Length: 295
Image (tube, rainbow, N blue to C red):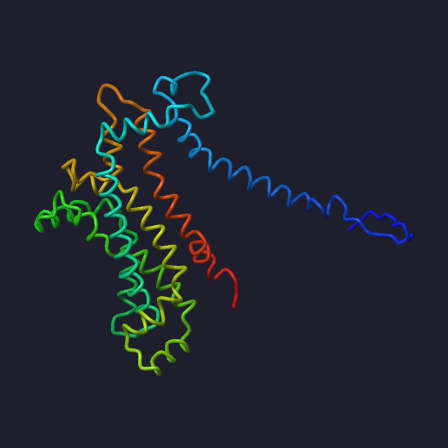
């Protein structure tokens, strides 16, 4: 690699980094340019949502479109708050997504730990059956689940959105794979020597080690529950129990739609997702990267 040189006042030559060393090789520059383009393309829908939230409905149909924010954001947010029960639906979604996420983290981590570190009769068959359920489309279970919710008297009740998804096959599989890779048998044996029973091993030994996997599963579960529309549409028909996605869908009128209100409500609905991902992003990345580097 070539370097440029210059002389100091004492006649000593100093090596200066070449342009190739300063800016990297052409392949590195190409990779960085591709990543930058991908980041811009990924963030543009969020920016466009913000721009549309600051415009009027008439401005959305103008040509050429405006790519700079307008001055109607507070007006549109005020219309959302005044004309629809946004905070009621926002609270319903927060209760459903938060409770659903906590239940999934508890049951899936406990089941995944058991599959990874305990031996019991029928373990291979049960794990194979668990993986087989991941191949069944979710839509096939809508009618049986609806009948079950009806028999339990949970129609138009938030329990119907929380309890059926308290554990997921993907969550158990994810936690089992992570626990098998990071929880060494020596650690479990040391816990048994210290007098820990099965639940103590899970609570005191496994959970602190499984935090990256829990953060990853928590983000995925919260996003999925917050954005779910199909199952709430099946079991909820009372407006007081609407989730945020159902409320936004109900804002699309038959004859006319105030798209500025829809965009403002959608923007407000994305705020919790951004907050959750920002809080747990480091643990999320650590969980995804686990296993990519050899011990």
